[in-house]
Every structure is written in structure tokens, then in C-alpha cells.
Amino acid sequence: MTDCRIVLEPGEDVSKLFGSMDKNIKEMESAFGVQIVNRRTDEGNTVIVSGEDADNVLLAKESIEHLRISIRNGVELSDQAVAYVIDSVRSGEDADLGSIESDSVTLTVKGKPIKAKTAGQQKYVNAIRKNTIVFGIGPAGTGKTYLAVAMAVKALREHQVNRIILTRPAIEAGEKLGFLPGDLQSKIDPYLRPLYDALYDMMGVESYQKQMEKGNIEIAPLAYMRGRTLDDSFIILDEAQNATPEQMKMFLTRLGVNSKMVITGDLTQTDLPYGQKSGLLVATQILANIDDIAIHTFTERDVVRHSLVQKIILAYEKAQRESAAKAAAKKAPQIRRAPRRNE
Image 1 (tube, rainbow, N blue to C red):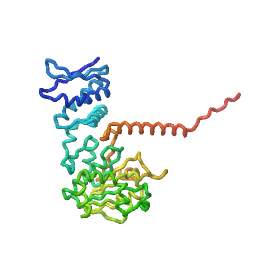
Image 2 (spheres, rainbow, N blue to C red):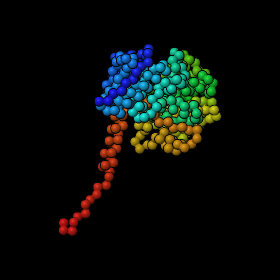
Image 3 (spheres, rainbow, N blue to C red):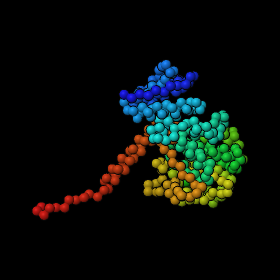
Image 4 (cartoon, one colour):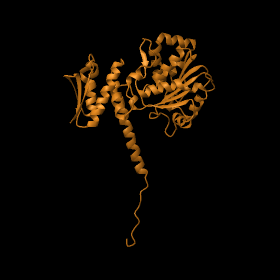
């Protein structure tokens, strides 16, 4: 049995570290296979970590130290934050939530700051700041669309651009949009709901509608981008995995003067017809080495939805790998044994 001790500073709030009903500590105990208790010793309030595996004891101690730093920096330890620290420590990556959450992107309509919650999200935000075109690729729940909209709203508020343009392929209706009732806005609303939700959260419904009336915000299906030149704009293409290579080339070449583009998508959720290549995949392969174009890939560690979402993503990835391995095994040529002379 190996153990280590962490002596807390006078006045340090143990309840924040341990969480409600000790949920933070229980999460670490489960993750590292250790026992964590709080004891009053001659040195002061002391957290004792013990376990059979010395490496896991040290990893649990490191996780606790990162959580302590986060608390001192004013970070609220949500379930997602604790899970992120544990995963980051396991993988040997930066787990400092304080340095991440100190950078506010913009404010919601209620005045709440919008911040990156993982190192991956922070790199994505920095990439958008530094580059003209950014591809954000990753699983659901990683904040790739929400943070892109936040950066667009910030740019509009600070008069860096004159308008925000949001678009996505209406793949379910075959880009025809004639099967849905109503005008163009009514036809595309079902496809653009995640973008609306983000804008309502950051601007409020009334402010959003005023900006729409002024033409400062434009929402349109990808098919309506052809033939345009988009100057002084922050343009977001969402669900880009459902764009064909031709549509993606058409969209990227709409870029005008003093504009910025963010293209988001999840290559594991392509709804294109079987055998049709995703324009998002093709674009990232062709444009990988061009200056002022950044390609950022999120992982399951960047998921900030319910903790189960990360587990679901990992389970599907495992199933896909196993399926691919079985398919490859079936296609492998069978080696036949040459018959012996006397057979």
C-alpha cells in the first residue's frame, strides 16, 4: 500500500475540493483505484491518498493539486471540469483550468462570460483569433459551433465585421427546400436551430431580431451562397460534413476582404448518400499546409455536455474500430497450402 499526503492551507475550503456529497473525490477514487480521505493532523487539514498502485496514487495527487489551483483561480468545479482534469492528467496533458477559464470570449445576454472549458477549446478559440479560415472538427458536445458563434458575436459587437453569416447544408431536403411549407426562413429554420439557440443565448431574441432586420445577421442554406462575395463578414458553415466537395469549394471561394470563416463538422456523422465523399474531409486534406488556414481537431476530452456523452462517443469509436477490423479480416486473401507430392 502506497500513500501520500497533501496539507491544505489554513482557510482552504475542503467542501469545494471534495464537492457535494464528496462526488469529486469519489470520481477520482473510481478513476485511479485509490482511497482519498480528509484528516485533521498536527500539520493541519490533510488529504491522504492511498492505493496499491504507486503511479495511480501520484496521478490522483496531481489531479487534486490541479483542482486546488482551479478553486483558487475562482473556477467552479462542475462534473465536466473534474472529468476533464482526470482525463488530462492521465494523458499527460495540461490540466490547468484556471489559465483556460481566465480568457473570456464574450458575454451572454444575461452578462455571463463565455469561456473555453478545455485546453482543446482554448486552442480552437486562439486559432480563430489568429487565422482567416478555421476548420473545427470533432464529436458532438465539444462546443465547436457555440464557440464559433461566440467569436462571431464578439467580432460584430467590436465592429471588426459588419455582419454575421450562418449557413449549413440542408441535406435532409436534398438542398431543394421545396418540400417544407412557408417562406425561405420557415424552410431553413429546422436545419439552423442550433445556430439560433446560440445567438439567442448571446444576444437575446429582441436584439437578434433587430440585427436581422438591419441585415447584420444573415442565415441561409449553403445552396444560396453560390455567386456571392462575402466582404466584412464573419461566416460560419455548420454541419460541414454534409457538404459535397463541390459545395465546399464553392463556399470557401466566397471569402471576401476583411472576412473570417469558421467551418465546423463531425466526420463520424456524415448524412451524405453512400459512396459520396464529404467535402469537409476533402478540404482538410487539400488545405492542410496553407498559411492562415487552421485545422483544429477536438477529442472526447473536449466534450462539455453530460459526462455520458464522452462515454457514448468512446463506445461508438470502439465499435467502429472492431467493425473495420472484422471487415478487413474478411477481405484478407486466404493462403492455400500447396499439396504434397504424394497427396
